[in-house]
Image 1 (tube, rainbow, N blue to C red):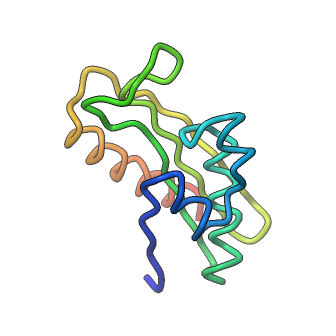
Image 2 (image 1 turned 60 degrees about the vertical axis):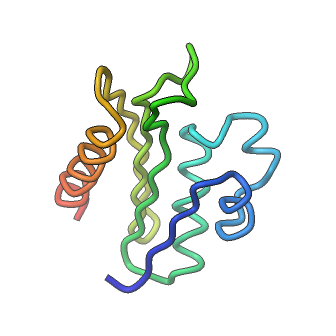
Length: 113
């Protein structure tokens, strides 16, 4: 492990990961498009062989009908190969959503490499 970054807010995604404001306005920070931009830009910044980006709504608030609490996108990038996975972890609290997102990420990494 060489590099880690937490970009919780839209501002930090734009400032540190260079996700465009237009992309966030059009699709939202919790979207396949945003996750793809996050992982692509992270790979440019970190120069790591494997890059991971996660964006989601862990709650307890912040969800909507279209993007409910529990919606999570996990992106992986290795060389030119990119995968974006969408999950919906329903009926879970914030801690459980965060924990299962990490477990799912480790599983995805194992399958990806």
